[in-house]
Length: 471
Ligand SMILES: [Zn+2]
Image 1 (cartoon, helix red, strand yellow):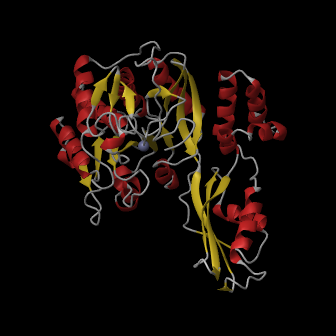
Image 2 (cartoon, helix red, strand yellow):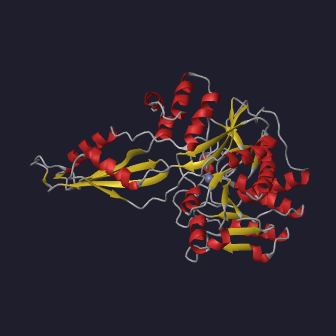
Image 3 (cartoon, rainbow, N blue to C red):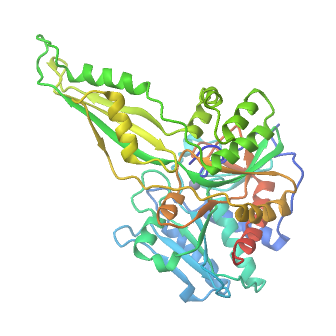
């Protein structure tokens, strides 16, 4: 789940009922193509919504890698004791020991899907008109299948990486879970997944526009999710005797002031590079402003003009918005309390304390308290360094020559926040191409182009080889 090349959200748009017309790219040898598709079908058809959990899928993956010749001691199935259905499987592909391992992440869980809402059965893989349909086809059983098949292929080819490759297929990335795999593993089994670098396949990937390859995004950062509760109280009393001290009116007036709160513009290495690249890709009225914002120091007037576009505003600053409100206890009584929930998405580098101070200042009302709901899982930017840009380009351009490569900041969050919060540099490097203008992840009739799936498998194989080289 994210924006501007969302992880947990890549999009596909129908073009005359068939897949994309963009020029084809390399695909795996026939036997690997077939194996990848078979694994994909198997994973899509194992229901891994919250009610079912991820254990069955993790055990299926365990069987595949054991059959492929991985040592039992290098394949660990682990579920939290209090959540046995939320299993994870961690595979170590041993290398020459040159440097800290690289950890590849894929989440196994999917968002609920109801058969009556879909035109095809959501928990079956259906191939139709150049597409594979099914829950998880884009988020992210596609990435899981590509990762698993690539491990098996590399093993068969007797490839030895310079550093260990760790692959973790994990539980509970999607909203509502209580047994997030990476968080659990980092806390209880850090030795199993400790790495110098994380490559998350849940995010990143290519963006088509009108059927043409527009750019390849890779995630270097995401905003931090943080929630506050506002509360105010009043004496209450009989509804027939209203007075000046009323919690609901006080809160409503405060929310009006909060609506006007605008956080200062904050730019990161990623958003500067992103604005620069998007200015090149979208010649138009916005491109001059994007360049002016990418410069140091940035042009505040240009930033204000771009802020009128919702998705650009979210790239420029921390945002907060009222999402829930409640108050009073009876139709015929004066309220004794009123509450609101304020949901914020902080820029990398911003802090919960700073945001709370800004909220309190904008409310300007000592009778409204502002409380932080829970300490945020901060997610610092993983810098788009020249080294990583070169390495990513070597893989991407071996597949899709000449495409622009753009570092991106997601406005939602992914498991990267767990690994970045734990101090491990993490990049989203999924390899699926989809349309920029539509997003079926989490929605109905989720699908991936058949050609795009095959290409993503070959890309993932190359990515494993390249990213396992020593720094
Ligand atoms: Zn996802």
